[in-house]
Amino acid sequence: MFDDTIAAIATPLGEGGLAVVRLSGANAFAFADKCFSPVGKSSLKPSAAPTHTIQFGKIVRDGKTIDEVLLAVLRAPRTFTREDTVEISCHGGILPAKLVLDALLAAGARMAEPGEFTKRAFLNGRIDLAQAEAVADLIHSRTELALEAANEQLAGKFSQRINQLRDDLMLTMAHVEAYLDFPEEDIPEKTKEQLLQRLDDGVKFMDELLSTANEGQILRRGIRAAIIGRPNAGKSSLLNQLLGHDRAIVSPIAGTTRDTIEETANIRGLPVIFIDTAGLREARDEIEVEGIRRSRESLAKAEFILHVLDASEPLTGADENYFAEFAGKKRIIVLNKIDLPRKLELLGRAGSPLPDDGAHGVTRPTEAKVIGVCSVSGQGIEVLKDAIKSLVWAGEIKAEMLQVVINSRHQDALNRARTAAKQAAQSLREGMTLELIAFDLRIAGNAVGEIVGKTTTEDLLDKIFSSFCIGK
Image (cartoon, rainbow, N blue to C red; front, side):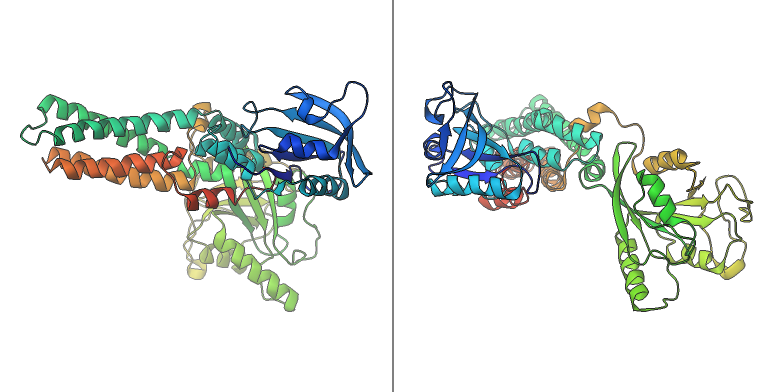
């Protein structure tokens, strides 16, 4: 429990029907009493109200009414932070919420730091560190799959498996350290085999977790896909179809897109950040020069590209240049305007789009999928979505996979734990001194403990919670 009491607006700033101001700490009820005036015979001051009840009244400061509110009284330990908590629902809008917050701060509360409510929940034992990170993942979820993965982690299913891994490592270390007290005795062969088996199982489990790192990154931050092609190939129309609404300006005039446009779409449950780029041609003015520069910058950051070709026109030198310049990128070739008479011929075996015919000296990609679409009518868009999903996520997305998708911090900790555990197993097999084995096992156990917060530092906590929004 902390001595001070913190307050913050817990809802996004802006106009809306409601806003929520949160207060948590030892003096939450006393500070709320100073500001809250009950209305009606059944409403009570926060300090006198039973836990988990709603009180109707007004927030008052210096004798002036700020707003009519509903005030929730939540007594420790049955709260998110395990502290006494007050949540005030006032009218939405920047000014009402700000004035309610100002009244609480004037009464003695301190302005909360980013993520401080969740940090207190962790430090007070309400949740572990992996669950605390899941709170942020939940807030930032952009697809139902991402939301499900965050809920699985928040429910503690991932933490249970991590805690079991750490317990196994610490149990192995305890066995090794027990023999340190009897240097004249060697570890019996049967016991050694059991210890090695436990270590091998732990390394195998860590390998399974590490294999989810890519999927975890995709669910949490999305994957970037740049839409490229020569001017007027239909890139902006394709973007609008993938998003399901008009986002980019579509015009028959080549070069309409002068800047990069980024929007996130839900593609088969995966958040894909599509980037509509300006056509890479000889710029006609300073604005187009800047647009092309930004396009190249976005292309460098994209994990894969959608290369749009106009199927109603023959292949051009500009198309060939795109193949050459971005040959190293994963791609899907999109043949647009398939509703028009086709003039672009793709020769060669099925699945080998645009084989090298010697023209322009360009070896064209043979592994890329070719999808025909009409970006005006939407024909072929669903097939394209399936191809995108297959490109970024192999196999079926199963519910049990969502329980253990790791983030980059987990990945770093598991890599260190895996290296130390493998070193301990090798040393045990080779008959190295038990002190070295125990040392490696302690490193492995501590690294795994970092994931759920059993071994951590203040700097690490500050880094994690500083990325949270204020009020959470």
